Length: 70
Image (cartoon, rainbow, N blue to C red; front, side, top):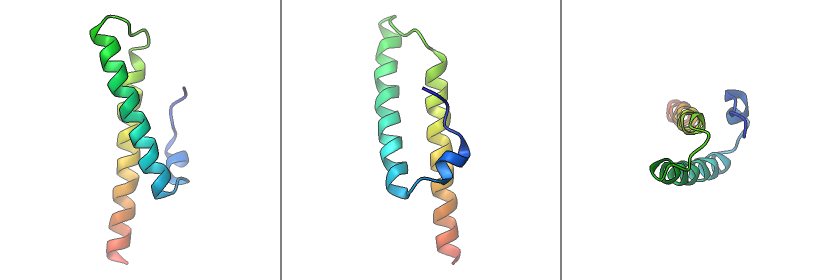
């Protein structure tokens, strides 16, 4: 899976963002189990997931701030 770009996140609706965060958190949870049992092959993917979640949360915060000031 490819890293999600910030432009892709900005094009998402709030519901799509929420769904993506849930999906990524599930994937990260499963990968942590794989790492604990020694089955994880792509260790860099965990970092990508964390950063993508952070990107989505940042855009969500920006949008909430813009709505509050409007």
